[in-house]
Each structure stands twice: as C-alpha cells, then as structure tokens.
Length: 232
Ligand SMILES: [Fe+2]
Ligand SMILES: [Fe+2]
Image (cartoon, rainbow, N blue to C red; front, side):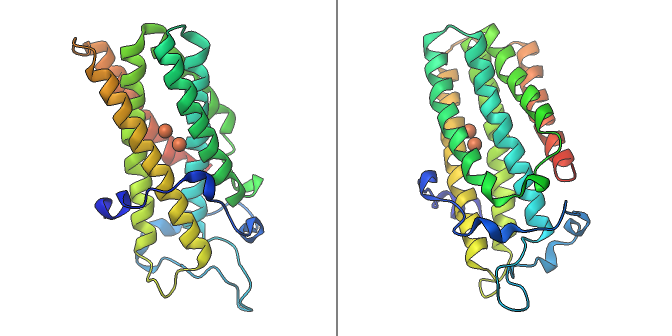
C-alpha cells in the first residue's frame, strides 16, 4: 500500500474541502468502533442524499492530524526561537511554511468541537521538541525532524490504508478529497524526513547515546500523543 500512496504526490495548496460544512458532526466522536475496521463507513451522505457528517473513525483520524500539524508548526517556531544557525533557520522557515499549509488544509474538515481539547499542550510539546535540540546544534535539530517525520509518514500511511479498505463504490467525493489531502501531506513529510536525513548524513560524528535516547523519546512521545488525541 505504501508504494501506492507515494505515487500520489500532489500540491497541497490545491487541496481542501469542497464543502467545509459537510463535517457537521454533532459532537466529539467515539472511537470505540476502531477495533474492527471491517465495517468502515464510507457513505458520507444522509438518507436524503445530502452530505452527512464524517464517520467517527475519520473524525478521530483528522483530529490527530490537526493536532499533529499544530505541533509541527510549533516545532519550527521553537527552532526559530532558539537557533541563530543560518542553515537551521532556513530549514525551519521552509518547513514551517509547509506545516502551516497542512494545518490550514486540515482545519476546515473539523468543527471546533471536533478538534483536540489539548491543542495548547500539543503546541507547547511541539515548541519544546523544536527548541531544545536546536539549542544543541544542527545535528540534534535534523535528527529530531527525521524522527518526527518518520513517525508522521507511518501515521499518514496507516490512515490512507484505512481509507483504501473502503470499497470504491462506497467512497464519497469527500472521502476521496480527504485521501488526496493525506497523501499530499504524507509526500511533503517524506520530503522533510529525507531532507533532514541528508543534512544529518553531512555530519560525520555518530549520534551520542543521549541524543539517540532523545530521538527515541520523540518517536515514542508522538505515538502516545496520537493515542490521546484520538479521544481528547
Ligand atoms: Fe505536516
Ligand atoms: Fe513535515
């Protein structure tokens, strides 16, 4: 499936909900139906054929994406707050623009009530995730971004594969739009990951044990945050 999604590189700025109001979900979603994904609901229309609410599992997915892109914006704001290194600043500025574009594209798919209640926490966590390694230097900054984006690639891939389990005959235009949006974001994140890895490879010395531990904790923290975000 992953190879299928890499072919979907799209310009994210061309994507967005054709009808932002179709996400009129009444309240916060219950993700208890995520245990069995065999009966994914891809029908976005109500009984009268009008655009209906997004299914709960997709709202939960998009909530994690919205929170993650918020965190990503703050990662680069944190980096820019603590580094004067010209290359790192350029890296952070270009990535910040992309992450802000991702956030702007995902946001209209969720009502304010459907977004994570913990957005301020994700912002602070993101800011620290960018600011702390940038204080240490370029190598720590690039290793952190590589770890984050490795996780985000897996995260978007899982969501795209979930959508692909819906029979095409049941998929709605909205679902196809969301799939294209996720695929485009994923392509950007892969680019970010590879760019960070390339810049990191330019530094000959291997990562210290402490930095390796930090990188591991960034991945573990991201996984934990997604679990929380599905519910809160
Ligand atoms: Fe992003
Ligand atoms: Fe990214």
